[in-house]
Image (cartoon, rainbow, N blue to C red):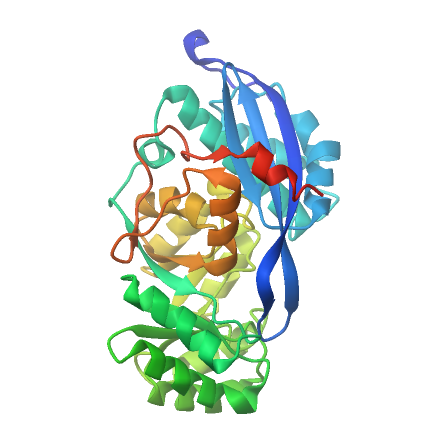
Length: 370
């Protein structure tokens, strides 16, 4: 696709490089449905002119192979200013492979890199290029894995609260009978002034979730994420209609395309929609998801990847907060210079640097190369 631009602005994408890093967790982690001891990040670098943009996704090494074998050929040669053209070319190219899952994650990594590249070529922070509506975004501390003992759980959540983050999220669902006691312990650890959120990762049945929601409400839980599978739109809506007032039902982190988010909203399944820029095919699609929320007056919460969502979050009016996820915070600090740090519970993009403001520390990353 050849998009017409003024000659002075035309800079073709000439390289697309991919690397995969597998970073061990600092301790075993688990949620309601999964256990893991390492996290894989696929990093893309897109080059045009004298600039290189960085993007990434948290996905399997298969995403890197897909970029190398399938997406690179349709992106190289496109004008760097025409990011939506590159996005459309990638979506067309994977038509027979299936849009959800690995394909969408791979597109996300490339798309983020292309937005970063465009901003760098223009000498602008990405947040400024997108058009900010606020200076910073509220964050919530996220971790509290089901593999943690009660003392370990409480210590992590309390540390965030002491550091100025006044909302925290813990995992539930691995042992439903133990969850009310774990939630009570978490509340005791953080005190009465902080917001407590729980995430079941779809582990409960509808009846389990409804009964536990009542018990969680006694501990002041205000957010119940994926109480049942995010594919169970009827179940999510049932819970949304029956839980106590003041407890929001949230889901959407596994959304890969706009149609998924539209179906979730049309079903009335959530009070707050979640979206993950590293899964939903990048910033190009996230902008559309945000518009979908705005059209329905529904809040949007950004899922994980805080270094990217800091820029997107200040530019998207429906965004109410972003997830300051333990795994991703740790990896972004380890692998990149320029990862933002929250202040008084708010995360602001670094507007003194162009693009995302990130630089890959190659020598540090290389030890984790897959």
